[in-house]
Each structure stands twice: as structure tokens, then as C-alpha cells.
Image 1 (cartoon, rainbow, N blue to C red):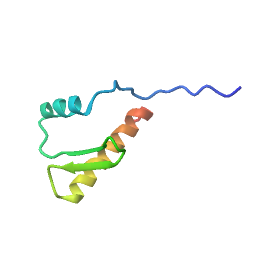
Image 2 (cartoon, helix red, strand yellow):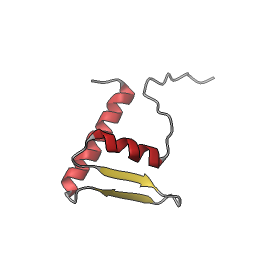
Image 3 (cartoon, rainbow, N blue to C red):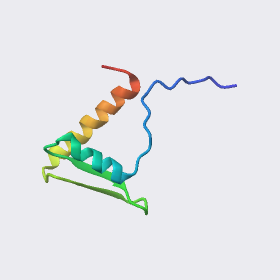
Image 4 (cartoon, helix red, strand yellow):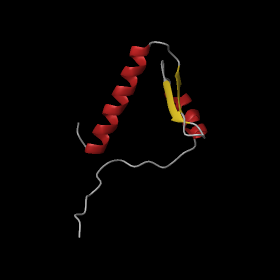
Length: 74
């Protein structure tokens, strides 16, 4: 038999894109980007800024935070 791997990360409850976008209106953001897949599984993305460096920074910081949340690192 294989080893049991304990999951120590965060979990979320699935929401519709509409629910997430409505909640995001309450966050008071000054810049944002939206990334997702449409019904045909095609990547779609857009944002409130055309500053590519800022969008990449936001995505990388979000990725970094998600990895920290999963691993439990500070």
C-alpha cells in the first residue's frame, strides 16, 4: 500500500464567477486582473490596467501567496 499524504493547505468552496466578481467589488482595489476559462475551456483574461508589468506582478504575488497558504510558510 502507498503512503498517506496529509493535505495541510487551504480549501475553498466553489463559487460561480458571478459570485466572485460581485465579492471583488467590495475589496476596494485600485487595479485588478481577471483570469479564467470560458465554457469552451479557452483562457480569457483582462484587467483594469494596460501596464503589463503591473499585471504580471499582481499574478506573481498572488501565486506566491497561494503557495505560502498551501505550504504553511510565512
